[in-house]
Image (cartoon, rainbow, N blue to C red):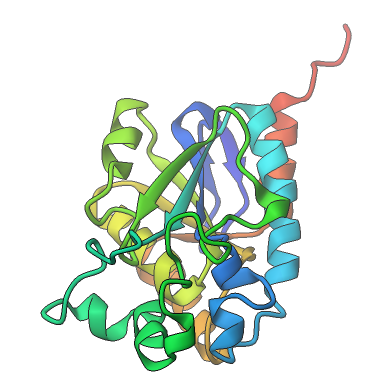
Length: 231
């Protein structure tokens, strides 16, 4: 067990029972020319979040912490995106933009498109798990819960995009399913005004989970993996 510095209080976690859940770190949400950028969202926070993820994932893999990538994705025929009877059809940004801007049809979050790809700086490595999703929450009609239960993983360190949408939705569902959600605040980026980020962090600190930072996680993991001093 190791102690992770967090708010509102430290959390005790075992690396073997912990996973880093990297939410939607895709070109769509984090790269110039991706969906968020085309929609006019400020993506300047993506670069530092990517750097934080690189440091965190390196330490996690060394410490034996599982790494799980969630990847927002639709089939080319949009058969898994929901028809007009689905709220996803009306509210999810990619669906809205592809209807309103014909030149983007078939290009946003579609399987094997550039927009859909995980950013180059954070490409999954052998042993990492990629879980495809077609809704905001990584627990929505996916194999995420079964994957975690099979490996007796209880503690989930969340990173990625967007703090206030897919990270929030997945981490809330994690709480409801009796997992321990811990948001790594500097390894995430939000969409829209900064009060969206502040609201999500406040809610998790006070009602749904815990908040930590990359340096705190890396320090704790490095202490866990450090070789003992000679006698």
